Length: 77
Image (cartoon, rainbow, N blue to C red; front, top):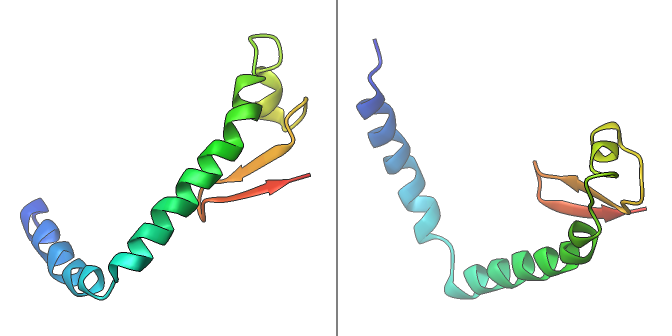
């Protein structure tokens, strides 16, 4: 049986070389990209009210932004 400890140790051993391959410039670009995307989402997020919030669930309403969290991409209609 596989223990949680062995899974964590295995994951740490696999992730370490990947992290070492990332340059500081790539990290800075990634942070800037995430910051820009989050700023772009602030206006649509502030327009959510208690009346139109349920429309998000069914994909309707005054929300021009579709979030695809799997790849962290923001699409507009």
